[in-house]
Length: 115
Image (cartoon, rainbow, N blue to C red; front, side, top):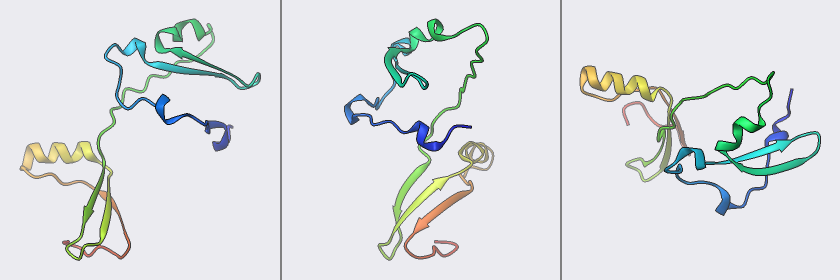
């Protein structure tokens, strides 16, 4: 199995896309040949030319949602909120008129229930 360090790349900040391309096939694609330590910068439209007959292509069609929120307690302390089941919260909002979902909280001191 691969090590987490195999996925570390030094990428200049200006090369990291902040928004998707209007024409998705123009999206950039980095191709890495591990054994040859070779790296090519291509476009997503080049993907088909990289695949071999025995390759398996797995498509991930999940969507990224703004699930990390930053807030302040009444005391002024910072709280970071990570929404875990955002989609379920949306469904509940449609049914009951309020948004509720499980989340993780990160704060300097424990957040009291009901805060």
